[in-house]
Length: 97
Image 1 (spheres, rainbow, N blue to C red):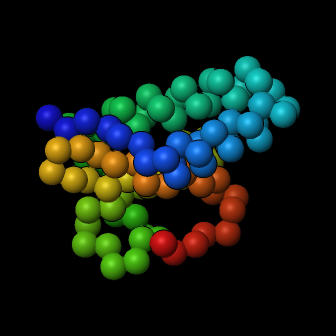
Image 2 (spheres, helix red, strand yellow; image 1 turned 90 degrees about the horizontal axis):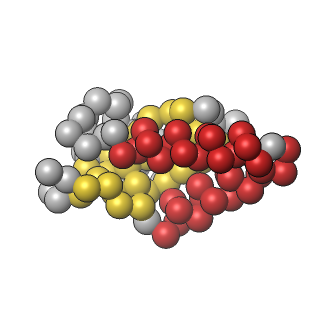
């Protein structure tokens, strides 16, 4: 069974989102981030549940993404792990990567 691993960049991006939300409401920031982490952990065993990441260049189907609370989480399905590679607010201008 695969495990979920976060890249440094994705962890940093999630932390930035947390800090932004915490400016208005630390309680909501905590709740939202815990739900994002939980949903990421729930991917295990259902890796292909979410659609192919339309913003990934040259995506062969191994990059997928889900949204929760207007936060978009992109991940890559590897042989032994699920790698969380990118976390962005859906209100940001979409960028191909």
